[in-house]
Length: 361
Image (cartoon, rainbow, N blue to C red):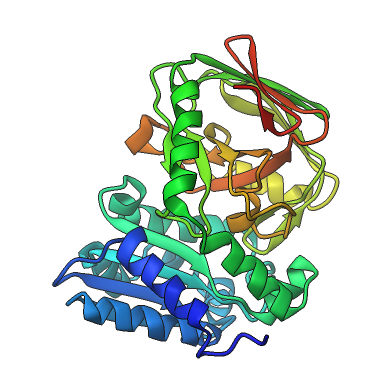
C-alpha cells in the first residue's frame, strides 16, 4: 500500500515522538527540523505539539542550500554559529529532527575541514541537548532517496521503517535493562570478531537503555568507555562507515591508551583521516553501543537504523556522553557498525556473554 499523508502509521509515529520520546509539556517551545518531503510527519508532529499546549516552531529547509553556503562562505563565518540560530537553539525547550532527504549524498562535496568548522561552531549551543538536560529526538520519514540507499522500493522501505519504530517499547526496554544490568556489573569489555580484537574499560560507568527516547528507531544499550582504556584493533569489514554523506569502506582503527593511533580505509581514506584530525578529542573512543532492535536485521547504509541491528555493536570515535560519565569532548561523533552475528563474541571480565549475536545469559 503506498504511503500517503493519510497513512495512520504517520499519526502513530508522531504521537510516539511527541508524547513519549520528548514528552512535550505545556508552554514548551519545540523546534521541528525537516525538509519539504517530510511534510506529512511534520504536520502530524505540529498537531501533537499543539494538543499538548505547546508552541510548534517548524524549520523546513530546502535540499542542498546549506551545502552551498558551507562551500562558498569565508572560513571566519564557518567558525561562528549564526547568532539568530544560536538564540533559537539555546532558548528552545526541545527539538524534533525529521530526516527526509531528497539526496542522501547531500553535503558530500563539502571539504571535511569546512564541515569540521561548522560542527565546532554548533557544538556549544547544543550543549544542553548533548548533556541530556533538554529533550530531543532524531528520526526519519520514508523518502525515495532513503529507500534507494537501502536497496528497497519506497513501499518496502516504509514498511521496514514503521516496523522498526512502532513496536512494543515497554517490552523492549525491559529486555535492554537486563543487558545493561549485566554490563554495569563489569569492568572490562572485550569484543572479538573478523579482524577485530579490542578491549576497553567501563568501570564505574553506567549504561543508557535507549528505548523510546532520543533516537527513533531506537533499540540499543550504550556506554561511554573510560577515555584512556581502549586497546587493540577493530575493523569494520562488513559495512561502510557512513557519515555526512560519505560511505567509507573497510575502516580499520588501532587504539592505544584510548586513542586511535593508526587508521586506514579501503575507500575514502582521506575523509576518514581528516575527520579524525578535526580536534583533540576526535580520536578517542566516545561510545560503545549494543544493537537490540528486533525489527532491524539488515544494514541499510543508514546509521540511525544500522547501529540498532540486533546482533551488532557499534563504536563511535569522538564526543562522549556526560550523562553516563563520558568526559571526552569533540565536534565529531561517528558511529561505525560491527557485525558479530557470524563468528563474533563479547566477553565481560573474561566471561563470554554473547556469541554470534546471541546472548549467553
